Image (cartoon, helix red, strand yellow):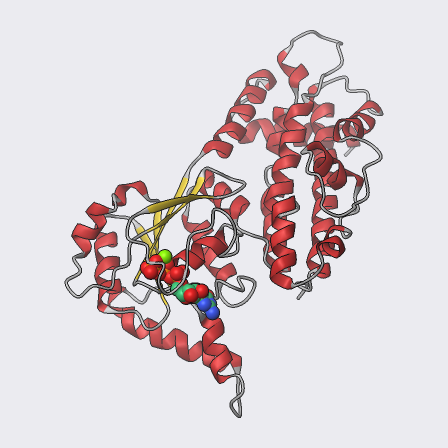
Length: 389
Ligand SMILES: Nc1nc2c(ncn2[C@@H]2O[C@H](COP(=O)(O)OP(=O)(O)OP(=O)(O)O)[C@@H](O)[C@H]2O)c(=O)[nH]1
Ligand SMILES: [Mg+2]
């Protein structure tokens, strides 16, 4: 098969995915779909007894430390008495809802759910730092009756591990297994649901990745996009997950950027809408955690100097995105030689697009390469932060 015909096949495959044979309509549809993916809301409710670790979990999920500005207040005396919504710092359409504690003796799950307006949420996370109690089970049953999903999270696992780590014959896997079995016994009347073991202070360990995989598999396509974009990159495994996920949307951005395809003038070169490409790359930048705020938090959490972490970002493209967002680094970081637009121009100019198919394949190649560069940079960042296991 010649190069040209495989390019055409790739292009027609993209049109097919959108159920369109007209390139002009497909471009408009691709833009619409990208917009919808960006604006879909995901509402996650976090419930559990007072002190279980709801607010700390919400902070961790938002990639924040407990003492950051805008983080949910945590601590022994910082009880959440009313429903509070926290938006994700870089994806404001992802919202985490901190629900009041459920530990009181006469707890009525049905009333509770009405009071917190259960219909608002896409799913519930029920957190406990010990065994799950009667109230947790009551709540899960009511959530199920209301045809919503719930997930059990057993948090503060780092404490459990620390408390037995110095004992003789310590075996972390055995300890985790015992806790998991113990928790599952308490909730087995609900049909043996999974229980995810988590430390909100170290999401890269234990079952956080499994929780994200499970949520992802049970959400609709659009909500799944919001979820995977927003979860913090806390490990190499999470980075790989994001890579695979974002690669799946390259064709859509490639198609949406085919501005020329909607102007039906034969023999005129196809014009590429660079805004679509830069927007896609800026999204990748945030989703991968290459943005200033995420790097600062990473540096604080891992006790590694920010300058060391930032110096791991080397690709001209990633540096150009940083510059485009006008994030002035606290410490010196290499200045990009070329702006993001110049870099894209340089890549696009060398190719003479005579038709939409050619333009589509070229933009997809550029986006794929750009994403790869950013992923490689983030790998180096994780390594610099000591999170490369
Ligand atoms: N070691 C450790 N401590 C945690 C973890 N999650 C929460 N904590 C601590 O547990 C205490 C209570 O956590 P919060 O997040 O405030 O609990 P909450 O469920 O929001 O409590 P209320 O708002 O009172 O209902 C705080 O001191 C947290 O620092 C965790 O995963 N590991
Ligand atoms: Mg709280």
